[in-house]
Image (tube, rainbow, N blue to C red; front, side, top):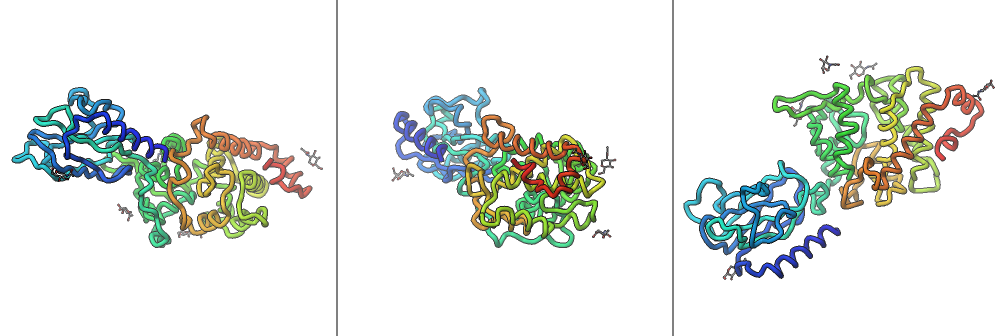
Length: 399
Ligand SMILES: *[C@@H]1O[C@H](CO)[C@@H](O)[C@H](O)[C@H]1NC(C)=O
Ligand SMILES: *[C@@H]1O[C@H](CO)[C@@H](O)[C@H](O)[C@H]1NC(C)=O
Ligand SMILES: *[C@@H]1O[C@H](CO)[C@@H](O)[C@H](O)[C@H]1NC(C)=O
Ligand SMILES: *[C@@H]1O[C@H](CO)[C@@H](O)[C@H](O)[C@H]1NC(C)=O
Ligand SMILES: *[C@@H]1O[C@H](CO)[C@@H](O)[C@H](O)[C@H]1NC(C)=O
């Protein structure tokens, strides 16, 4: 929101001071925010002159609309003549529209300008600042109708966040041939978690673990079922799936008992907090270590499992991520379906970035990772004794 207000203020400032604006000529893009993949349509009206080009600049490259940076300076992200080609115009239309793809653009603020007569660098019109961003407010909200349960031949992964994206059609519904970098962008778009964090973390891990492949165009793809391979990330001690040691096929389903136990924590409360989740996760790790002889955790499991605990709060309606509503969590984990009132990106303007130490989610992740690490490394005879003594493991681990 702040960004929107800022751009309106910038717009007011710029239109107030740059009075050499040709009266009546106008260009607009109709929206404050575009997602990658969307086409920017710039409509112009009452344009005068010949040799008119219409260009897209990053906002911070334009300080004076009467003296635009020239082509040679390399700041123009894109341009086209007013007739829509780059070649030549047989006639120079006064009104019309031109299009700019967003796929290759960096995220950030932009303006579209209409050049002066004979390709002049004195803009005769410019748009308000708009954003190419990941959390546009006007994006189409996924509705329940668009959720489709996976079919028998559709692949799903151990991660409910990935699966929900496929169930809602944000990723291939069949779960195969999924563009991995697009997956990071979609995670940012829908769950508001920084795409760069995902690329450096779980996505790089999948690549390193040889769970991905390249298509003919060199895009990195994944068939998401591959994420169940236990040669890499540990899938034991999941909070809502049984260990694969007790049956691989069964471990791919959400386990009703585990899910119910999660929701039953603090029965009188409608929400779970981070201590609840950490306590439950600690229980699960201990249980696996005691009952599953194949459980083996590696260092990167600490990162992944720590993040899994914290990410559940991204479904919350609480911007401080202190609590998450049980009803949201329950249906999300059971059906891998977004809550009906879920507004992508509504918790915060900027994505949550656990790698950024100034972002409060960083501390939450550290806390969650420490919890996981303690539970993984507590000597097993202590674990056994605690268990035999009937001590509630969650109180031990969760504090
Ligand atoms: C274009 O110019 C005409 C005549 O000057 C004016 O009536 C009209 O409002 C202008 N259109 C825009 C979009 O400024
Ligand atoms: C899965 O869906 C994608 C996108 O529609 C398609 O390109 C791919 O061929 C499909 N894979 C299979 C195995 O059908
Ligand atoms: C990577 O996976 C491919 C098939 O998916 C396999 O042919 C190849 O041997 C694997 N490489 C390593 C290093 O595991
Ligand atoms: C697991 O599922 C696969 C595919 O549905 C099947 O071929 C396999 O026999 C199943 N394994 C067990 C142990 O049930
Ligand atoms: C666990 O219990 C056994 C038997 O009571 C005891 O000998 C052992 O010292 C205990 N281990 C720890 C780490 O407390």
